[in-house]
Length: 363
Image 1 (cartoon, one colour):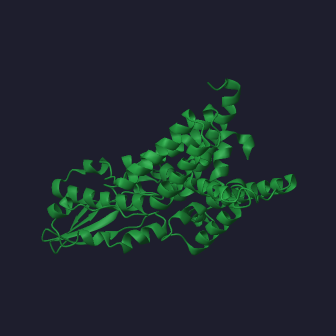
Image 2 (image 1 turned 120 degrees about the vertical axis):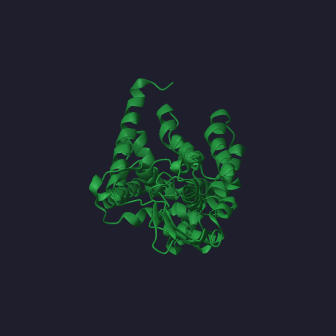
Image 3 (image 1 turned 90 degrees about the vertical axis):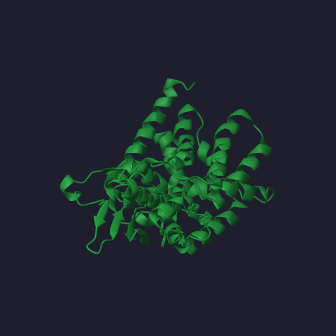
């Protein structure tokens, strides 16, 4: 059990971080856990469910029905047009998903799977999530099914049904559970290598599941929409709750795929490490704090909100990541051969946020 004299600074840090991120989410999206902060007369026309057109066709908008269905960064509403009991088109509406992820979903042709079918046939269609954009595509699939179910039964309760979860989700969940539990019971360097390899392969390159600013702001704005968020919930527990019980830096050390990849890279060159002077380390840590402060200010003011889409974690999404992010990722992995976990120690904004939540004096 953690002594009270040590736990209160941690609780204070956690509250400070929560308030900081909640304010950023509300300023960016105007919502908090799915509840709009706008005046009612500004939202009366939002989230139209069904429009019966003059030509006999029907247009469905899932902005209201699917408000609780969140992807990677927030809701992924769609507009469905049905004529003569046949789906004519499915059009994704404005959303907060990372552009690269969403482009991959659209390029997969997933919306065409339902076009030309009746609502009954479309609901029976088994449509799998797009690998590398699982949360985004699963939310889109769930929105389509929600709209079609509403069309069939006029019962919007389906919006709260969980997303369909595939093999990638369950593998990511298993790896996250292993990372959250096994290191508490077993102290083994060999197991550490196994866990880190799974983190990189499964959480990183296969499913793209990790905690970053985009994920945290999306959750604070829209809440945990579905049971597919279970992996993220577990990760958040290791990042913010474990430190309350003395397990500082737990997520970064045992689960984060980018931290794991840097450490694994460092193991490939154990005899040629560069020793940084104390002054250099201090300067680099000051740079990290200054960078984080500037980025948070940009987030609060709305000056440059999209920086959150360029955290280095997205380099795992090889087909969606910006070229600059991919290049930076490769550079930091190369540096990791000579300097231990350089991105984690001297750059990572998300990591510094975790440190601040553990104790306000850790900034």
